[in-house]
Amino acid sequence: MVYLNRIYTKTGDAGETSLGDGRRVAKTDLRIGAYGSVDELNCVLGCVLAVRPSEEMTTILIRIQNDLFDVGADLCVPESDQPPKYEPLRVTAEQVCRLERWIDAATDRLQPLTSFILPGGSVIAAQLHLARTVCRRSEIEVLRLVANERVNPQVAIYLNRLSDLLFVLARCANNDGKDDVLWVPGANRESK
Image 1 (spheres, helix red, strand yellow):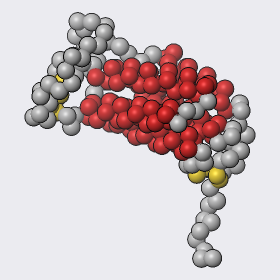
Image 2 (cartoon, one colour):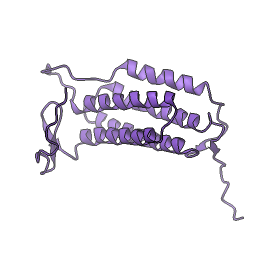
Image 3 (cartoon, helix red, strand yellow):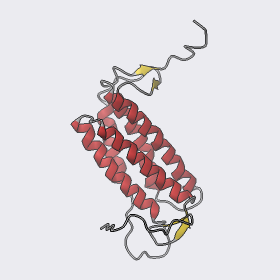
Image 4 (tube, rainbow, N blue to C red):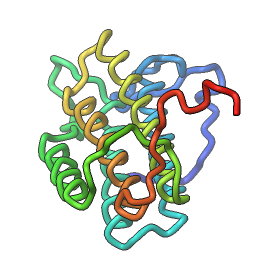
């Protein structure tokens, strides 16, 4: 249960913050950067939801937003060989499998691509493409952390799969891909 009776604590004024296990670290710590990036992704998804996508997409995105809080909770409590005082929340393989099921269902609605697509189209599609790129950056931040510390492997897998889902959802938001704008390689190399 989360209980916040005061938003500012002044404990971070010197550039440090607390992890979920109580340890104090610099706000520039790789772990803080990783879950900060995941928080940014969640905010971008909030912007997508504010534009009112379809009911089906809204349901999916709200579930993903909740999962992203799970990802942040997982990242803020470092893995340890010491028995924890309480069982930390960890991302599961089932959460990844759910993303894969959604990817498969959305992909079934789409024609195969014959070229890369330009991010854009409808407002919802454009925002989903933005979310996809923030998700990729979040995954990279997590992988930087993984190179230095133990992290639940499901976290990076979840973010990798989520960026794929956001890509296909963006295509669905473009009239099931019919309104995607295809990349034309070298189209502007010659002056016209």
